[in-house]
Length: 260
Ligand code: NAD
Image 1 (cartoon, rainbow, N blue to C red):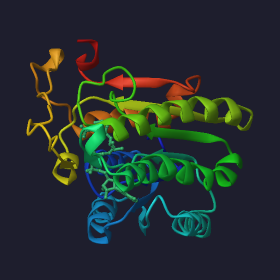
Image 2: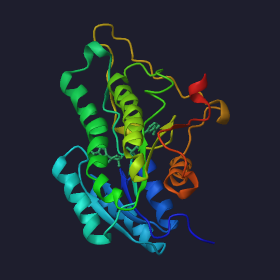
Image 3: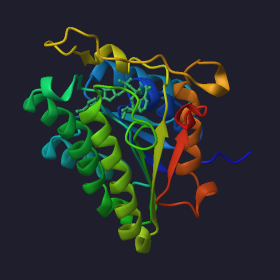
């Protein structure tokens, strides 16, 4: 049986953990050569080792998606190594600080915007010249926050970046269609990863009331969050030729969480 991504080259950001790692391994199994990009080298090395142990090809790119030089260098490395780029999974992101708006410091706001929004822009911006050679597929990870639900009080900066990623997807899809580059955006609901462990949550100091973070109420699974592997399967579909007529589209993967 022919593998879905045979001969393709894929750049995946945030490939050291969670959704990005699951996608890197799945894309590798499906024949893609994988550039695993992120900040933490030893995590990325583990992803790459897993791909290689399964007979695939992969390389580590230690880079910060919000830094121009890092992203230029990452693309140069891919070009030197493989001479092409077919798939970009712009997945890396942070929750940042979750706090009431009046308690959120401007620098904290800037950090979330810088990583999630500028980082997505830079990841795609520097990849376009290589993608244009043969056409390709770009996939962004946004969220149900910023699209259909805004239930998490405190996640204002995060939700703004996620809404902006959807607008970015649609603008990019329109602009890049003539180069046969498709651009789509995945909007996950609650997915079991470590992202929450890296979140700073602050209460409204003046009121001493906790910011509310309701437990995910997910109709399809009786409240159980989705998995990185499930999101990776959707990313694979969007990366592959099976989705060849789909572009500019947000796709929710949330067990109907956002319909409540
Ligand atoms: P995760 O924390 O495991 O993965 C995020 C990865 O991005 C990490 O490996 C991290 O090191 C990397 N990263 C962060 N900042 C970076 C930077 N500046 N440069 C390079 N790499 C950077 O969490 P995850 O849940 O797999 O998150 C992946 C994406 O999914 C994020 O964009 C997140 O917003 C989105 N998302 C997650 C959920 C969820 O419930 N887990 C829900 C909706 C959307």
